[in-house]
Length: 361
Image (cartoon, rainbow, N blue to C red; front, side, top):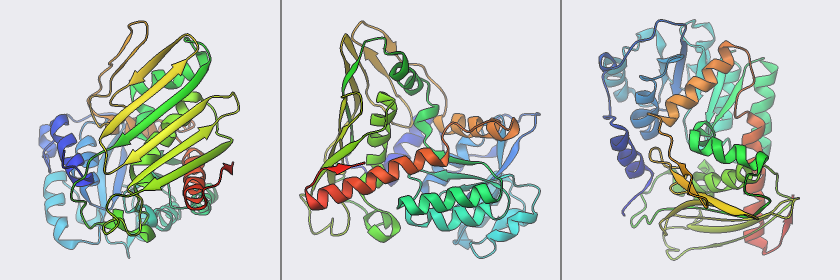
């Protein structure tokens, strides 16, 4: 399958029944209190996934945009009824501080810019949602967390899978262990992208790289499937197309060791198609395949149970859950500390791949 992020989002949008710019008139309105959300960055994920999902949310709604592409503004205003006063550029984003229509700023720019704009968002006094992966480095993650703490706003990272019901069952089983002690986990995600687009995802300075873009799903899955934090990691990287992947990884293998003795084998690639989370236990096994698609997450267990609970939109569920945490002043499901744990390990994976050494965490 010819698939890059753009095509993947397009195909996933079709699965969810979304058009590129759905009209707000087609979706239900809710009378209860809804938080106003401002999307920072109007790329494919915002346009084809987040904005449509915000037409289904009960506890939040799209009220503002920040963009560096003025030509996009008229279409967004027309289709989502965004007032002139709620449209910002990156240079005027700080003025959101004085806008009562906006309660949350959602950072959806390239990973290498997350820290810059998440910190600016926090300084407006608005709550911050930051798309995964949280940032390029652990220190950048720390700076985002510190800015949100200083401004007394909530910070949530966009790990939609932790809001998805079948995944939540796997997370629960990491604690209850209905199939006994967890021995090994295999988490693999990849697509055979024959002609990778020359986008920021091939630019290491902007946070490109398969481990950041896709591999973080496998890494996060290994952590939530075991319910543990790894104590060591080893990794290797390879490419079959060195003229294309001059700055970033094409395929990464990593192995995590956990305190209980469990071992996780992770793999991510834009040259190989694969998509499964498999957990092998002392008295059985369970799997999700696919485990992180926008729709169609499903699985089964060794004793015949099916994991096939359906929700209309993972992103809508994610944003509603995060909105309720703000409205009820309760902890968010995926805080900044969770995002930072993954980035610390991602940095160790790249170090191990470069040096060939086992990295203790």
